Structure formats: structure tokens, C-alpha cells
Length: 172
Image (cartoon, rainbow, N blue to C red; front, top):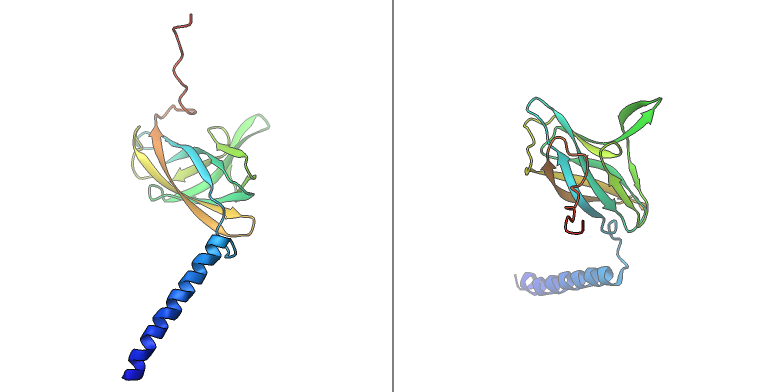
């Protein structure tokens, strides 16, 4: 019994020493770290009408290092995919893509008529002012996947882009 009690302080000291070493490794940058923090701005989702079962989510993404958007999920949709829209033979076509490149330091805009996150199998109407949680999966060039939580506000059904600032009428 005395041996067991004597061993406990030694275990605590070893555990504290290991924790201190791990913290030092992180601070000094010698530990493997996840993808550098990706910045997501201006996220929004297009509103829907009652029978509609899908809609798009749009946002701007900047990664400090080369990365790729490789997936997305939301509790508000049964299926979520990254999509691209493009004109093919004068016909607008939409298709899922496996990943979207995020070049280091460059803003990639997901917008109507271009790349976007497609929310499918939605079970309720998305109304202006609702907030839809979306989890983005970003893969760094080292293969590490980071998730980024986004809260996207729902805009009116006819919304095509970010709201424009009010015009200044006082200078006419």
C-alpha cells in the first residue's frame, strides 16, 4: 500500500512534465498543427418557399496557406455538397465538385451563378432572418482537415448577392 501511495506523486509529476513539454512544443511551433486558421466572411443562405427542398449558401473564404474546401455539412439539410455553376454551350449547368481550391491569401467567393454550397433535402422553409449552421471541411496541403463552423443568415428568396450600401443622395 505504501508503494502505491509513493508512486502516485511520481505519476503526477510525470503527467505534469509531459503536459508542459506538449505546451512548449506547441508554443515553439515544433508540434504538428492543424491547417492555419481559415477566414470565412459574409455567409448567407438564399431563402426558400414552402415546397422547395434545396437552396444555396454563399460566402467568402480566405486561407493563409494553400488549402481546399473538401466538404460541408449542416443539421438543416440531409445532404450538403460543394457545387459549381458554369455556362456550357449557352446552357447554365450546375454540378457537384469534390473540392474547391483555396489559394494562399486569395479570396475565393462562393456566389450565385458560381461556386456555392448546396443544401439539399431541407425539411422546412428558410425565411429571411433565420440562421443556418454550416460546417465546412478544409484540407491543408499537408492533408490535415480542419472544420470551420459558420452561421449563415437567410436572405430573401430573390437575393442575388450581398446587400449594397445605401446611396448618398445628398451630393446631387
